Length: 126
Image (cartoon, rainbow, N blue to C red):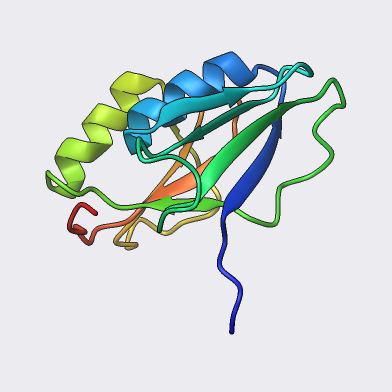
């Protein structure tokens, strides 16, 4: 038997802002709020399904370095250009990590500067 990713934990300064952003991006909902200010978001079906949940954990610590893990997303119901415009309207911004302009993906940052990529392939909704 193998493991499966069930949760991703992202430390952040403002869990509420990131919860709103990522819920819109991924069509997730708030699943839980903890006393420490952490917010768990995930698919409407809840924890344990094929998609992992995301726990947004508050921190006052300054960002130390570029994270070694980033999220890649794919549109499920529109082409890449339309999805790019939607993500930018939600508060994402373009990020320059040294790309050449020939890539088939777009590098973006969420409202707190966490980089993620919008890939070209369209996936079928779950």
